Length: 282
Ligand SMILES: [Zn+2]
Image 1 (spheres, helix red, strand yellow):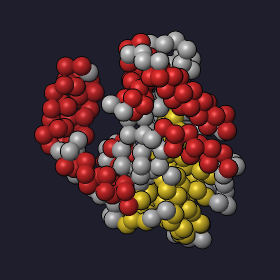
Image 2: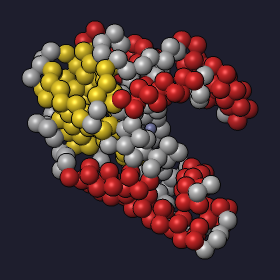
Image 3: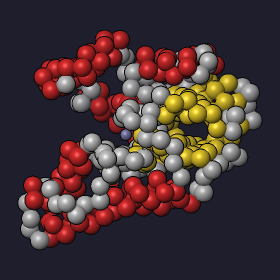
Image 4: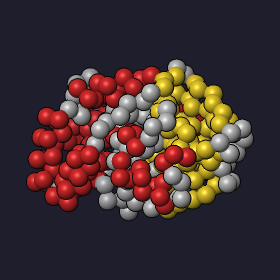
């Protein structure tokens, strides 16, 4: 993990290869944590690495409901702020894909396919108490702590509930999973045309620094690369559907934009199959 200090106001926790990013906003009245990562242990380790105590965290922001952004929530006694639909999606997940039954069956599958990951997940689940946001907003939340202004802005795209965090004075943008920098994005809860449009909106911030949800920090070129991947893939898939091609034929077309040197070719093919399903109304 890389710990990058931006402008004395922000600490970015960046995992360049795998895993999720998070960040801190430092103010004279305490610290704001943007996303709590995938486990309580991981959340604690970020704070330790940056010399910040749990008590100094005055506010937590969940940018969206995915487990790798919210499963560290239980460590924090302060308010946890999120968009209303983030809370609703987490509540729904507790009854479905995060239920004990579903997690157990996922775990036994994982034991066969990736034993090391299964050990990690088992240890996370042992102490996990999924903790919901305690404070919700609609559209846009304008906040201030210790004289530092911040905005949490609902955007959708990657997931319907996704928000970004914007520091207008320092011009720092926490883009969350609207940006996967230098790698294939996870798109299985996404509205692709909305995501493409939101990437255009991100350009308008004219940010001095952008912290993506996954991958290293980026500028406009990181936004454009992902926008090109999503837009070209969506258009090419729609052409395949129009021509009546099968999903196998579509997913293996070498004409799609690829991330060079990326090992997650399978994720790319899964992405194309997801788009195929969406576009063919399956
Ligand atoms: Zn996500």
